[in-house]
Length: 202
Image 1: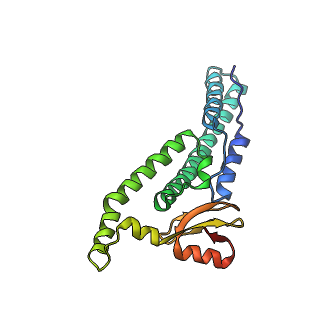
Image 2 (image 1 turned 135 degrees about the vertical axis):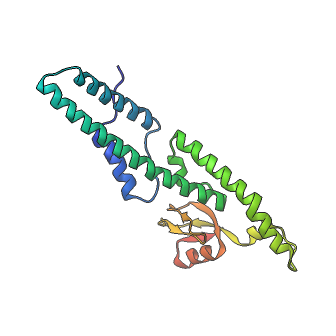
Image 3 (image 1 turned 90 degrees about the vertical axis):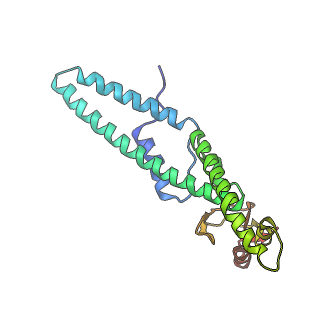
C-alpha cells in the first residue's frame, strides 16, 4: 500500500508559502505524485461512503466531499501562482540570457514548461526584435550588429549582499539575488546597484 505523504494541512502550507513570497518556493520533486496519491485516497473514501446508507456514512460522505472541494481549490490556486512565477522566470531568462536562481526549484513539468517558454520567447526576439533593431542601427552612421549593440548596453554584476527582487527596464521581475550570485543586466541598473552597495561590476 502506498504511503500517503501529503495532508491537507501540508498542502495548504505549500500554498501559503507561495502566497507570501514573490520567489518560487522549493517543493519535493515527487510533490505531484504525492498529491495524486492523496487525492486518490480521498476519492476512494468518498466512493466507499456512497455505497452505505447509514447516518454515519452519509455524514462522512458530506465531510469528504467538502474536503475534495477544498483540495481542488487549493491546487488550482497553487498551480496558478507557480505558473505565473515560472512565466516571469522564463521572461527574465529570455531577456538577460541568465538562468534565474529560482529555476532550480522547478519541478519536472515546470522545467519543461520553462524551457519551452524560453525557447519561444528567444525565437520571437531573434525573428522580430533583433532584426528590427539591427535595421535601425544599420540605417545610421554605425554599422555595429545587434549582438554588439546588446553587449555594450549590459553589464555583468556580482551581488555582494542579498538583494530583493526588483523590476527591470522592460518591467521584468529580476531576482531576488543572494550574495555571490552573478547576472547580466542593463548598464544603468548595474550602475545603480553598484551605487547602492548591492553589487560589483565584473
